[in-house]
Image (cartoon, rainbow, N blue to C red):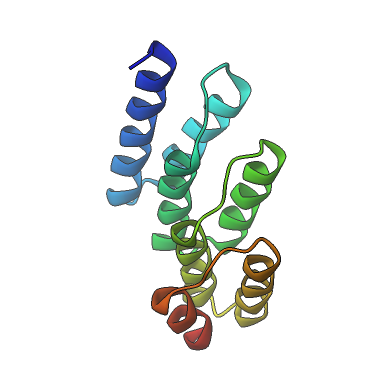
Length: 122
């Protein structure tokens, strides 16, 4: 592994730990630091941060992270959208959840049962 890959893995692990500990604000601060630095960001790193937003029902923050992923050309995946749609569900943002399903279709990202169940429940 290169030094850049090791840094990305380490940051992803710290962001995941913050998300599990309901420290979503710290996770977002770390993502902000990474975005402003030379550290390579990847899908796993952003998925961890969006999952933290989902746990805290911070759907607006999850949407902002999706935007950052788009700006940085970081690939979206089903897991990314599962967390984002679930954040919408926890905030009763059903319109945003449905828009995310449209974004998934346009981006050729396949929803799974988790995505669809969260969208329906929103």
